[in-house]
Length: 135
Image 1 (spheres, one colour):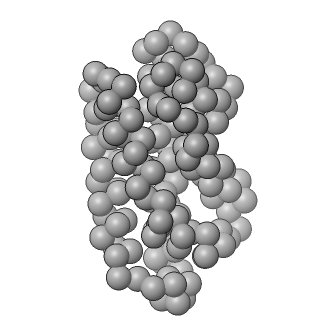
Image 2: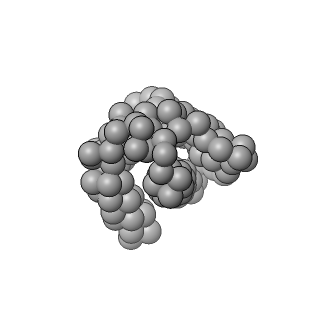
């Protein structure tokens, strides 16, 4: 998809966060992660920003297609499927659910869940970017 400068800037920021988070977490094992409050907080915030970028891009594309607005972030992801911009709402709706936990049930995100996301799910952000690029 040929996207505008705003989407391009959002993807630049997404790439920056993604690379930094991947590099920081590369050699971190779970015990270190669990015991490092600052690292967990940095991961939570980074992931929150990255999901916000996904939602912002979705909403921008919906607006550019005069297809919105939508009532929730999850609905925005579903609308991208309807528009043929992405193939499936998963794993992106899972990202939104995680973001909602961080924002609304912020007392403490389970370290094992956070660790799993940073070790195994960061590729989903690149997948989103690639799907938008190829739409």
